[in-house]
Length: 145
Image (cartoon, rainbow, N blue to C red; front, side):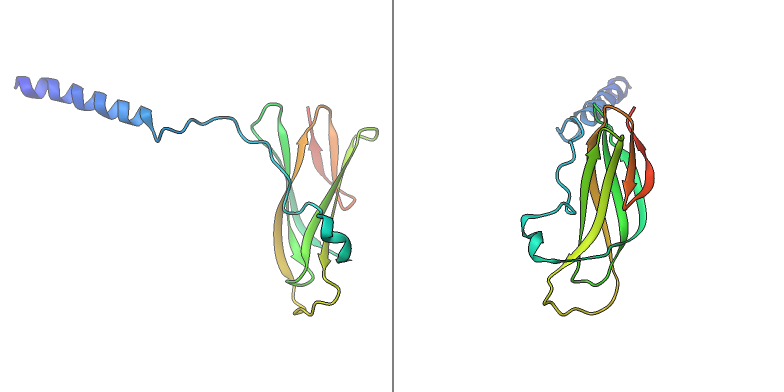
């Protein structure tokens, strides 16, 4: 009986230490968003510009200090050969962040004429003041304190 009385506390303590140890990784800070897959590239000037048909846009505040903001875009491109791009301009005088979403394609490329879905995230960075966010001229929300 004495064996049983000390075995349970030892097993419980072992389980508690094992759970607290985890996988050894500390949570750490949330990373700051870097360039987006939708960011313009140097070779873009050789491509033909086209439309991007937006279906949804969503603003997200990341759990960082200071808060960072991310814009998620979903929509369709004219063909599977088109690539989506987003250019961001921050105008402090007007308190606007304007995001222009468009597509690019090689002018001599033959491609099936079928809409192709896309999704991308555009980092907007931190906001020390209130900004209205516009995507292709349409308001999608505000960020900042």
